[in-house]
Amino acid sequence: MSIEAITQAVSQYQIGQQQQQAQPRNDVGDFGDRLDKAIGKVNTAQQDSDELLSQLASGENVDLHNTMISLQKADITMRTLVSVRDKVVGAYEQIMNMAI
Picture 1 (cartoon, rainbow, N blue to C red):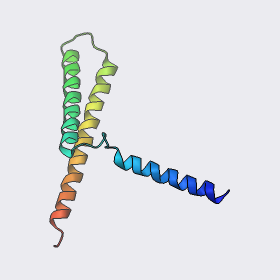
Picture 2: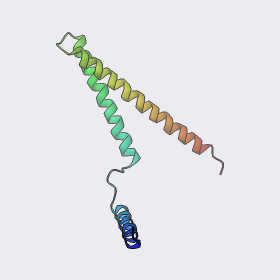
Picture 3: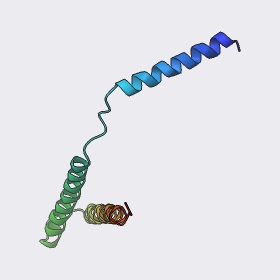
Picture 4: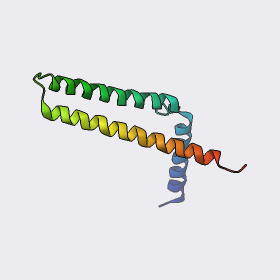
């Protein structure tokens, strides 16, 4: 491999890095917005599972398997949200206990 090819590859890499840094990242949002969306998803999952469970309890023709899957999804999303909350609180406590 010649020196010119290596030099060209390095310069192309550097140009690509500069372009990535220049482009704004759309996937990065405010933590509060992400938390609000996550809480909304958990709330929606809870409401959907509650609706299916009430339909099942009232004797309507509801698929039992989908009802149970919906209940498990709601449980998993709630546990995940609680776990994230615990991690955030733990991180906050560690920051507060730091010596300045």
